[in-house]
Figure 1 (tube, rainbow, N blue to C red):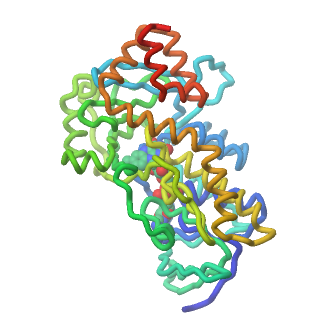
Figure 2 (tube, protein in one colour):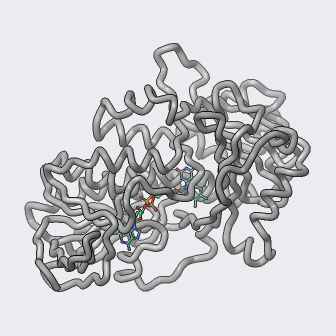
Length: 418
Ligand SMILES: Cc1cc2nc3c(=O)[nH]c(=O)nc-3n(C[C@H](O)[C@H](O)[C@H](O)COP(=O)(O)OP(=O)(O)OC[C@H]3O[C@@H](n4cnc5c(N)ncnc54)[C@H](O)[C@@H]3O)c2cc1C
């Protein structure tokens, strides 16, 4: 082994979770090293839709960054709402900001991960940080006073990095998780998704609504069409891996079949061309509470299974959990006690306090969305009722309202038109 480097925190992974942790560690003046096996810019299979939570963390990291994003229309498409298409084909347009003024900023945006993750990567502050890109982690070991990470750097040299604590922000196949957590993947809390880039899809909403098509053949998952700049669209399909396996569903065939034959979808692809090869990746879902940290390690983003079980959103939760990991480390740093009980209080409890309700509601919605009749029913009712549409619209910003969606009383109320 070559040289040994001592630092305060080592982060594995420089995607949204790792970049988010780094932004806030730098804010707090905490030295750290980030290691990523890729060289940036790099791709990540994703739907490319960023929600208000992404915007919130970016804004907290630096108030100018969001304007930079929204002022670059060649790369970012502002999104003002969501279109739900029920299994019976009926659709419902739900604006995120029903009372918007010219000053209102778009609540969400779409951007390829190639562009967005590179944007985040370039914002990592080198005053407190050293980045090893294109570097391979060969071993992670834990002693009573430190974690050691052995790395082969891009130039082939071997480095050992010692730190009192490690952040695993290395995605779905996390090596940090594999090293410290002994549980395998839970098929009930795991989805698989495919992504395809198309050029020339027509019929997009003028305000770039993202579209979720709850086709009967992929419930409780959905097919999505998300507009991107330059006439491009991110098109994909995602479904629980347990269902894919049990029903032997070929997701690729399902997606291409819908694009070719679905009466609402296929005309929009009449002149569209597939631009890249169709690629798949996993989504580890936040179905139930599970440990997110242990002695001397913290997991963030996909490594911690923090993808929203209903929407599949994981970018915002990755950035958010990265921020919370940095806050926990700042709180603990004076005592340097990175034992599991301290980290559980400073990190796990805070993550679940802030995001736990959202996860619980989304898990219930995911379970409910396997019933096509319920979906059709709500969309039919909302189609006819402006007040119900307004209620659903507010649910995107108001968690208390969103909770109603997961309760039987909500459906009884709309049954009796109350
Ligand atoms: C098909 C699909 C569609 C999706 N659509 C959306 C969507 O529209 N909106 C949304 O918000 N979320 C979506 N998600 C989820 C989202 O992509 C993830 O939740 C998000 O990327 C998690 O960020 P992360 O930083 O935790 O992990 P990643 O983005 O996976 O980043 C992990 C980083 O760690 C690095 N790394 C991995 N292993 C190592 C190692 N051994 N050594 C060093 N570095 C390593 C990788 O190179 C990578 O840069 C989708 C996911 C899929 C699969």
